[in-house]
Amino acid sequence: MTTEFYARNRALLAKSLQGAVYVLTGYTAVQLTHDQAGPFVQEANFWYLTGIEQPDWLVVVDGSTGEEWLVKPQIDEVHEVFDGSLSATRATEISGIKKVVAHDEGVTLLRKLAKKHSIVYTVENPPYSDHFNFSLNPAISANKKMLERMFASVVDCQKELAKLRAIKQPEEIKAIQKAINLTIDGFGRVKQILGSAKYEYELEAEFTYHFKRNGGADHAYDPIIATGKNACTLHYIDNKSKLLARQFVLMDVGARVDGYAADITRTYIKGEPTSRQKEVHQAVEAAHHDIISLLEPELPVEEYMRGVDTRMKKALKDLGLLKDENDTETYRNYFPHAVSHGLGVDVHDSLGGARFFEAGMVLTVEPGIYIPEEGIGIRIEDDILITPAGHRNMSAKLSTSYT
Image (cartoon, rainbow, N blue to C red; front, side, top):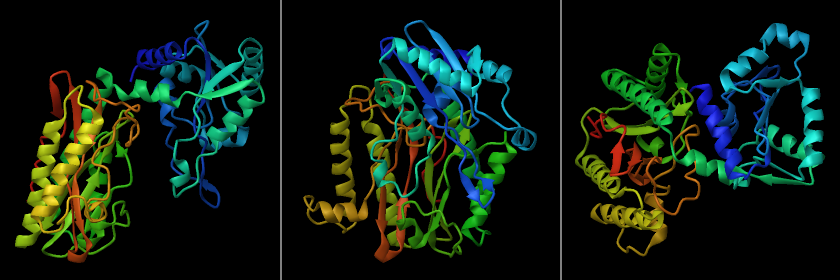
């Protein structure tokens, strides 16, 4: 991404906030072991506006004047020696923001802005975060508390940012495609070793090696390599079970390239499938292609979801798993997750609360059928760009077949 990309995003946000002041923070580093921080991944909104990938930075924008500042974190000499830091010059080169101030200067700056502006916008913790099974990064709450001490009103601008991020710019689509292409190549390599591999982690290692070997890319999320009944645990990431003959292996994997994620799932077989396994896989595969065919601009999201439910209920009825289409409990026992989500900087990017699909949106399509009592879990997932004329399957080059 270029400095122009980040500058454009800041200007668009300032315009949507009608020239108000906004202050966003990057994440802080969090503990991994007794005396070591975990791998650092930047807060997506902050990255989208600045490109800065180091912890504890702030961006401050006064939309009424067009002035912009980056606020550096305080780093003592010992940590400077051991861990290094991002220089002001380099921060400007990345973000395009010329004014880089120290932490104390940043606090003074915010107090001055608070005398002219009663309202400040920021990003608060994600909605529905009380449903998460992990602790939130403390930087977001700490930033909000600091702003509340200075400004009369602190307002969340997450919706405005989500709407901006939902429509991908050309350079974003290019980055997502690069991540998809790298992931597809990884699937090709894994297919070659599937017959000889003995454990799930061998397949994970092949993806990791391929990503690192080709540009130093990382996984966009913890990869899921799930054989047999393991695939019925939707976010299975243990990846340690033995691979057995005549069992499906569900692989949900995506590389991150230039800040953007891929998210692809295929379900392959080690050995020859049974007739029942073929039947279930073919049902998911057919539904997958039918659901993708629904997508086009101006399609109401609710209509899409109704179409998905109709198609997936038919698949389950054909398999003898669902008798009554009104039996929602049984339906959700075998298809318990959403069929689509946005894709971008975050693997689960927001579509901005859109009621209709719009050209420029990128989303996944990932139907699945999970039958724990039969030890079968199958999901097929592709990444789809909504175009002015319809849609483009960005990962169509990778066959959906189980062989």
